[in-house]
Length: 637
Image (cartoon, rainbow, N blue to C red; front, side):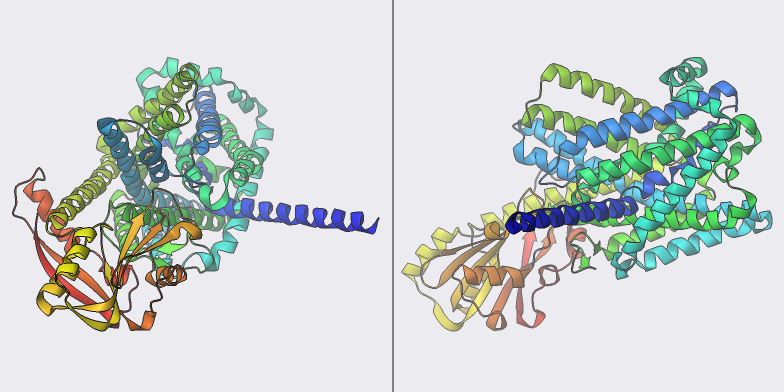
């Protein structure tokens, strides 16, 4: 009897612990994942009536725009992303690069189709850099603009205050988000609670606004307003710009906490606030210049501005962290040169800091605020990059579902066509703002995409040149049987880009110094197209003859290679090297243009420039600087 009681207690305790963990993940997801989409009410509805293509504030237009907002949230976020696209995870990780890696690994498409899919996946990732620059600018600026409502005399301080807030945000990045991360969830929870209550208060005064839940009002709006109605879709899209973040952050929190938090809190709060803003406009059309703050009573304006500013900083933080993660993935996948990546938390692997990305984002974001001058002007540049990324995600998901999962083709074609029509409509509407600022994120995306392609192409050409100039491991071991060089006591590790060939550093050392260490290990870091590699599969040690070893260390695109960890794991597999006694030999290539190839000369020169400014292998692999010997090589490409 007591045994049964004890088992029941253990089961209840386990269930309670699981529930607490689930609640904790949901609260954390609230702070990180939903900040961007959660702060959209600050400017989304306003831009429909007061922006570049604002339409008159009439009864039919208000209900029509609200209907479009409601169904955009339901169809794009709830149905497309949370129901379908989140199924396409790469070992639990989401995001457009994880989706691209999934296709690279499992797709059976031929070379041309595979190249096309990888190319558009990389372009979609590159576009997120443009979004990463605009989101902090428009979010913080739209929140601070509430100051001029409280005190019109402080209008001239909006831009300086916004720049100070953004500068502080970027200057803080090197500390990591762990110190303030615990505050994110509660603040965003308060934000959603407050904006939901503000909406309810106004809806009670004009409940007729709830009729906008019927999709007919949105369809009627588009049919009656023609081209202008289509253009307004670009502003309607601002309400769902954070949807891609839900997918990208899936690996940190899991699907279920994100889905539950969206359904129980985020979606209801957003809908209530948008309906409240609509009710306000039906009663007071003159409030179209800022309907969000029009919901706030005069006594609550100062606390609301402070809460909105806090929420937008958190939303910006999530996107900045996303850009850091995207940069790390691109480096690991071989599409960007090595950059300094600092881990800011020993407990959370996803919390990283990339100085080069941080300062670039800071300069661009502050420049955008100073250049555009208002959130309405910035809204014209906002959205086109995200609409393009969403369209690309739909295309990639189609190939995953048809090629890998083997879904029913007819049903899949019908579903993807439906989502593609929505994506194309929003993309087309956003492109109407091309000459009003939308060119900026496209230009940034194109530049980053070009850098990615050049770096990958240059690396392939460089590796081919090095391979042609060296020997295979088997050939090298055969040559040692014919002529044994002088061996000196000691342990040496040579890093090699190809596990089957001898690194040039070893050949040059042998040619000029005529000696080899008594124990030599060839280390190769192999990138796997998965987010993480399990410890048991991470390191493989092959013992060759005459004191030689070959070590292959495997890691995923969300991991950071660490030589100390690899040596420890290799020693467990029979290597037996002493870290403090090892000499590390590296080749340092000086790249010059020369030989004829398909790669254009200007691309070769840009690749050489990127290579010269890349982080050294010593710093990247965290090698002990006092034990490293670098051997220079001149390589023509």
